[in-house]
Length: 424
Image (cartoon, rainbow, N blue to C red; front, side):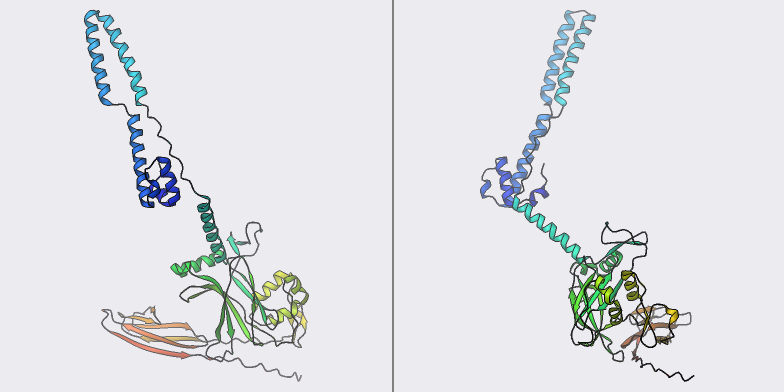
């Protein structure tokens, strides 16, 4: 039998064809809900008819048993005791045979399968294909972690020996073009889906171009624009203006509420002035011909270029050169004099205070653990920007609350290095 859910899934034309096959009167003038009710009535009538034919009537079996018993009594008076046993056994066996055949259920009549028109089948296939394409375009992962190693770009690729990790590289192609390349694990995409929750259904993959200004300003990074992308690729070309400028690119998902979930961040690059370099080629095979210039323009000789150096050495299968004191490049680090003096300076913020041990304290909306005497200490990062941090204490009964606002601003400026002449 066709279930109610299957009937509701059919179109009115399909239900009308089914009602016509069942012989429903006036089927051409019925609506979809009325057609479903009439078809259900026909199905119930066919089901009751099948059950009535499969079970023998009880009244007939009782009458036949009474007639047979009376005949047996008359025969027992005329014949002797031995013959009575033979004659009484024979009708019982004979009566048992029709009972078995009568008790065997008959198969239910087969109903015709619901017909699906070619148009409906085509629409369903288009919807299914569109759903699969949407899911594929939303997946930014470029590899799956299997046993601690990465299988990249499908099952046809062999398993890599190195662990798969999230990384993003930004290269300078010329004064007006950047190239972003990335590797993202499937686990990172699943974390983004979990973090966005119900907003994941409307989130779209996005490249966010950030303009990196002077670190001495209050806002070191500002959003230049968002670039929609799709899954199935691992690099993207970005056009920029106003060279020379410094940029960084982040990849993630942008929800319809404006929330941006960052999956990976790139290195910082600076575009050259027009005319300082020729247009570079587009593929790694061509990059190998002029890799030193591209490596230098992309910040390869800076101290924080770990991923960039690793990707260049992996793709080009050669060690990247180091820059000497006079600007020359030497492949062997042992042949170089110390050309740079590493000097990293950072700062952090420490907030401390004291209250009663039974109170609860929150710093910038996050709870803080108190010591037995009510004191607390919080160590926080201090980025280059202005921060307003409310520190709130609340009594145990929730009737008293005190708040202290700490406003902190950090401006870090890196001075130009000073080169001293070697007088010895």
